[in-house]
Length: 167
Image (cartoon, rainbow, N blue to C red):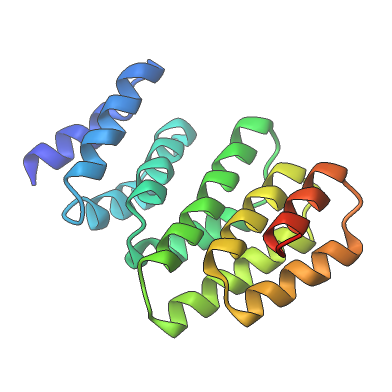
């Protein structure tokens, strides 16, 4: 556990390459890293550290991170960097649903991703939600994609939604 704590502390580094290496190490040590990462996220106020934790949890795709990733998807943000974290979290929800058959987890993810696809102004978040809903591939996910196709005005997102629908 001490090794995991040291790795999590190393995520606080501002050097992107080092953080990517640390994230990769934390992903390799999963599932043992999931709970310490979630705990570190909640006990930190440093947005850079939190962003790196979300990156690791999204890549791991463990259902224990579903609520945290869902909360991050729904967080209002003030800048592009924080918006990118939301997109990563949306992709993490898709990954989680590809590794679980728990209907409660899948329903939660589909609800969060449906919101992310239909409501926010952030086209990148809508795009990420469309990709994740395509991966989940439940009737509810396809229903959300169909609703988005009918209302989407951004050509890039509309094209991605169309692709997700098999078009």
